[in-house]
Amino acid sequence: MAYTSREEIIWRPLTLYQPTCEFGILLSREFTSEMLKLRIGTEGQERLNELAVEFVFGWYKCSQPTPYYFREDTALINQFNLNLGKGEWLALDGCFGKNPLEVHKGLIKYESHNLESITDAYALMALVDFWVEYSKTLSEFYSQE
Image 1 (cartoon, rainbow, N blue to C red):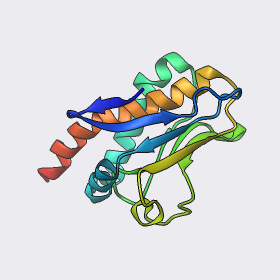
Image 2 (cartoon, rainbow, N blue to C red):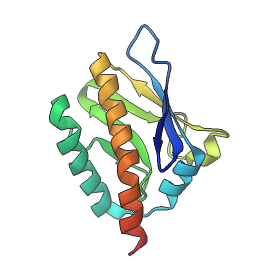
Image 3 (tube, rainbow, N blue to C red):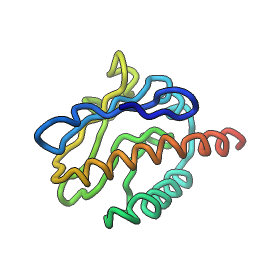
């Protein structure tokens, strides 16, 4: 299963067949590079968090006010959050604040943590997909500034 946007494969889930609900995501290097270069600042990051809460968490029933943690002032997301109190998230694997393009030689990897249900996994994938789909709008808006 692969998800496309802008006529290219940008992300795909990993290990969905595991007996637990944990999974991973592979993200294209090109998309990662584009998001690292795109400076959206706090305003853009807050707006994307608001939209994710409205559109994704509207059906998931989550009270996490910041589903996205960004890298500095860029459009790249370091971590997707469901419930930080329970430690439910999907985060860049092995980066620890470093540039993922320098840490990962191939595709960029995210790993989930502490998921309890398939609904949790689906909600995290919905957050990833929402970000990827909305990234074109972000690029158009913030490239004009």
